[in-house]
Picture (tube, rainbow, N blue to C red):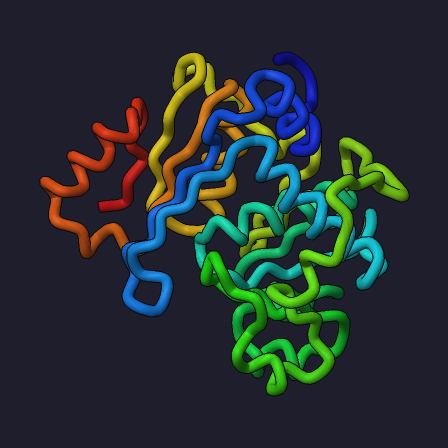
Length: 246
C-alpha cells in the first residue's frame, strides 16, 4: 500500500479481502454494567455501524469537512466506529481537553451533552442498549442507542476531505488525512494486535493493523485481569503483537 490512504478506503479493502473475518474483538474488564462483555466485529458489521453513524452525523448534525467532532468516549469499540464515521464525512476527530469545544460532541455524559452549545450525541456503552437511561437529562442530545438504528446501512458523503485537511486533533497534536493511516511494516502481514491503552492508541492501532489486512483485540480494564488468564486470552485470540500498557 503506497501513498496516502484514508480510513474509508482501509475499511473498504477489509470488506473486499474477507468481509466475515473478525477485525475488532472487544473485551470489557472494567467495573460496571458492561463488565464481561466480549464483542466481535467483522469488516461487514463494522462497516454497517460506521455507515449508520456517518449518516447520523451528516444528516442530523450537518457534519462534513471543516466540522470538528469531539469524542468524549472511553477507549471502547463504539468510539472506534464513531471515529471512522467522522472521517467518512470528512470531519475532524477531536480528543482530549478540547473535545467539549467541538462543533459536535459525542459523549457518554448526559450533563456534558446538555451543556454543549452545539449538536450532541449521547453514547451508550452496553452492547444491547436500546435507549440511554438518562437521556432525559441530556437536553436535546441525540440518544444514539435509540436513534442510530433508524439510519441507513449505506453511506455516501456529500463532500470528501483533502489530504491536507485536519483528520485528528489530540491534546494539541494535529494529524492530517494524509498522515492518519500509518502502515507498520515491522508488524508483519495480517497482524493480530492487542491494545489495552488510551483511545488515541486504540485508534492508531486499529488503523495500522487494518492497513496491513490485520485485526485488533481491544481491552478495557485489563489491568485487573490475572496475568495468567490474560496470557491465555491472548493465546486463544491468536495475538501476534501485544501492545499492552501493563
